[in-house]
Length: 54
Image (cartoon, rainbow, N blue to C red):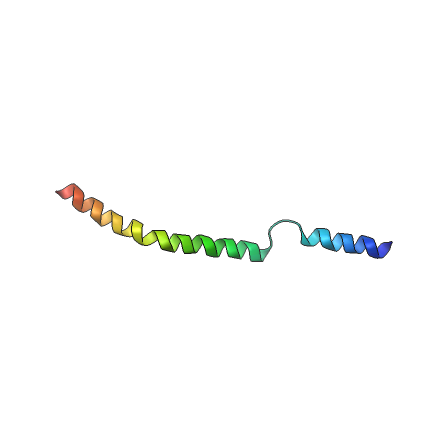
């Protein structure tokens, strides 16, 4: 009986919330998307200012 309660407690502690690994994977995906979008944003600013001059 005691062994069953310990196993249930271990399972419930491992299943709660986000783990550090899940957080790191989310951050990596976010920074990859940011790296893909950043060059477009950087290049759009000079093009927009040149269009205003004309």
